[in-house]
Length: 226
Image 1 (cartoon, rainbow, N blue to C red):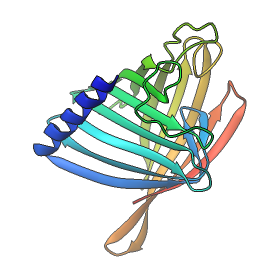
Image 2 (image 1 turned 60 degrees about the vertical axis):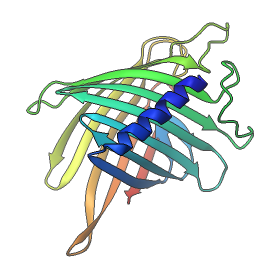
Image 3 (image 1 turned 180 degrees about the horizontal axis):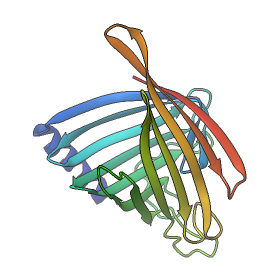
Image 4 (image 1 turned 90 degrees about the vertical axis):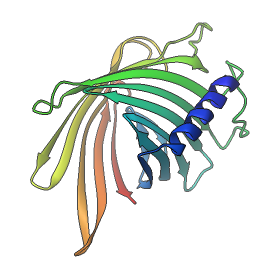
C-alpha cells in the first residue's frame, strides 16, 4: 500500500505542474454525516486540489472542534462526458487511537481504498447513479473475510428560484461496513444558497436533512463554505 501512496504523490506533483485550475476551500459543518452515517461532531473540512483535462486530484480532511477525531482523504476523479470514475483513499483516526498514517497492516490500518463510477443521464434529465466498492484496507466482516463494502446512490439536482437543491437516496447491497444486509442507509435533501453580505460578496451556506432508515436516525446539518 505504501507504493500506492507514492504513486498518488507522484500524480499529485505531475498534475500540479500542468494544472489548469487549482482550488482550495473549506466547509464548516455543524456535524459530519457521510452516506447516512454519523461520522463526527462540528468540524472544519478543508480541501486542496486541481483540475487538469478532465482529471481532478485533491486532498480532503475533517477535524472536529471538540474532539481529536480526524480524517484525511486522497482522491482521483476522471470525467469523460457523462461518466465519472473515482479512486479514494480514506484515512480515519479517533482520539482513542495513535495517529499512524503509514500503518498499512490490513487488519489494523486506518486506511480503506475504494473505486467507483458515476453516470449522469443528461443535462435535461440530470439524474446521477453512482456505485462505490472498497477493495483494500481495513474492511472485514466478523468472520475475517473481506466485506467488499459497497454503496450505491441516486441523486437528482434541481433549483427553486435562487436555491440549489438535491435529493439523494443510497443503499448497500449486502453485509458490510454500512449494514448487516441489504438496506437503504441514506435518504437526504440538501439546499445551497448564497447569503449576500455586500454588493460584491455572497457567502455560500447549506443545509442537509438526512435520514438513515436502517439505523432509524435523522440528522440536520448546517454548513458554511469559504
